[in-house]
Amino acid sequence: MAGIALCEPRRLYNILNQYRRFPRLSEPNYLCLLDARTQCEYNESHIITARRIEQSPTGEYLVPDYEELRCVRYCVVYDYETSSLDCCDNGKEEKEEGNSPSETAKTDSDSSCSQDAEEGTAVRHARSLEWFTRHPVLVLRGGYKHFSPCYHFLRTQKLFWIPQELNDLQLYPVEILEGKLYMGNFKQACDKKIQKDLNIKAQVNISEEPATLFAEGDNYLHISVPDKIEADLFSSFATISHFIVQNHHRAEEDVQVGRHKSTFS
Image (cartoon, rainbow, N blue to C red):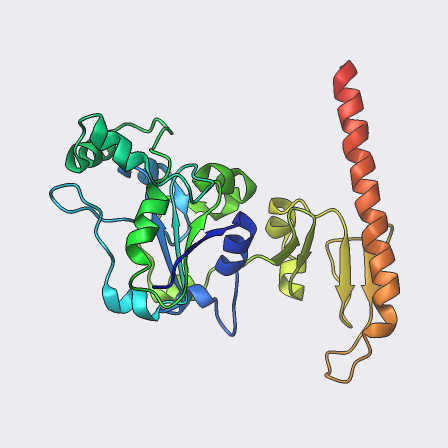
């Protein structure tokens, strides 16, 4: 039994944006992302490539294909808001109150988009999947409620993806510090949508070719280094670190000034 573990939103973001030659999401055994919310909530929007957990005619959640689970590298389950692995006893309380599992599932299936989907659904389903996976089943901490506003650009209503669509996905830079520091390639650094979505205010460009989005100045640092194994990066670390720290402090000051102004507006 592989067990279950919490998955921070930043980790899921990075899982979704991994690539080799092509996005890793196009690999059939890379990610099984399961949405445990109501059908209405799922249809309204869900995390990119997520599938809603299927239910039997009696309302019981079904385990996905055994062979798929056995081979998949990441199996991630999320509901609306679950933030702990200790909230999987709600089902017992429902039975004590007289609600059968089928009645509960039916109510969940027929409910409106109330955003009150039962907390702990993801944990309970993860417990049923851990018997089939080689790696721990991951439960998204904070669920869709927390992930969605942080990474709104990874929301979709799309239900089916063909391989070519997955190969052509626009990936985002890896997030190193939540909402503060990212690492990507030159193409991502020159993409206006990515810069806007991630609210990038400053950029370090380590390549021979200068970037085009950021003008020379306090918010742009260009370290001209050839793309070779023997290239010397170490000698520039102090300069890069100082630039990152300075821009971080500047951003913090801007936030404080903004708060001060809004107080008196």
